[in-house]
Amino acid sequence: MSAGQINCLVPYGVSGSSVAVAVNNKGTFSNTVSIPLAATAPGIFTLDSSGTNSAAVLHLDGSLVNAASPAKKGEIVAMYLTGLGALSTAVPDGQGATAANAVKAPLQLLVNGTLVAAAGLLYAGLSSLAGLYQINFRVPVNLTVSGTLPVAVLTAEAFHDQVSLAVQ
Image (cartoon, rainbow, N blue to C red; front, top):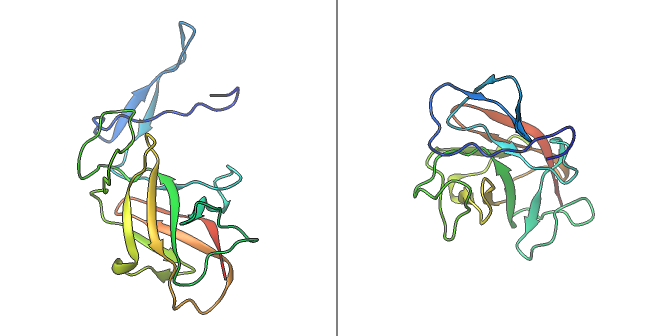
């Protein structure tokens, strides 16, 4: 939390099309607002925390994928995001996965408009931190260009395409 931002985690048991939320600041409650809900609402984390620009992606050695260290076509990388919804095995609210815990909802991943084939989607699920999901995928080898390329995640309820990936 900061003066201009509050981060919160929606508990897995919350359902419906909206939820009422109020903030308690040292015993003083804000007005209650209605927040729309969806089964999924992917939001890809970015290196500069802006929600746009370079996606938060790591090489398998744990180093950042960025312009100085781009992903290679065919390389397996891990991208970090939120909002992928229900998991194959429930975890307690506020906890991360202790083992592989895949998401239930199907998703598609595109790099520069090229669909990452199902065989290239190696894992989509919860990471070890609460609310933090990761998608491990193979960068498509059939990309015809290199550089800073757009990345998109598509679920039945949402489409997130405001980030990019450096590819060599």
